[in-house]
View 1: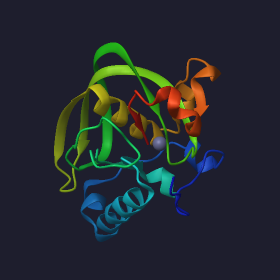
View 2: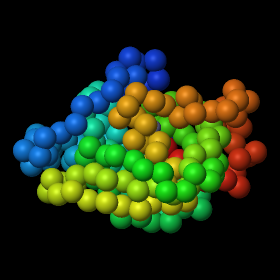
View 3: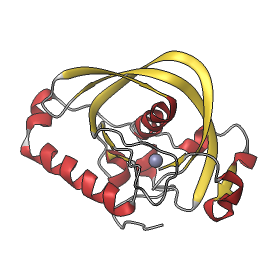
View 4: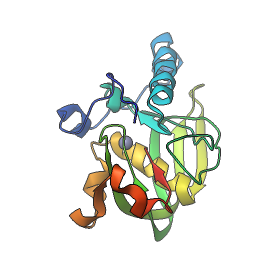
Length: 182
Ligand code: ZN
């Protein structure tokens, strides 16, 4: 796995803080545009499919998500559009739990099996500071919950039901059938 110097790792107290929302003016400002650009660069360089601002030390409610079917790190995922999500609020539409082996650029080398609700509504502001709603389900719903957790000081390891569900990814032959993420 390619690491990235900018990405904070588990143990850094910043990852446990609650991020603050953006004002609409802030979203439209030049520093925010630059931040979004930097987040895409860091995410792509690290080979991730999502990144939240606190992971690069910015305690603001911003996440970027893009599933990539050509990813070398991930099997069995389909392309998604590029999501830039400011100030998200999450509503569960279907509580039925679904489990995936999650990874995280802030928790390198590990995977954990986490069960989360399978369908959600996300209310958020886009890059034009417009109010938007999005329905996400299946794997994408897990990715959104994982990234949004970062904005409120949670990591996927907090969502494990058992420590036995936490493994090193190079033991991953046991999980190769499953989708993984980070
Ligand atoms: Zn993560």
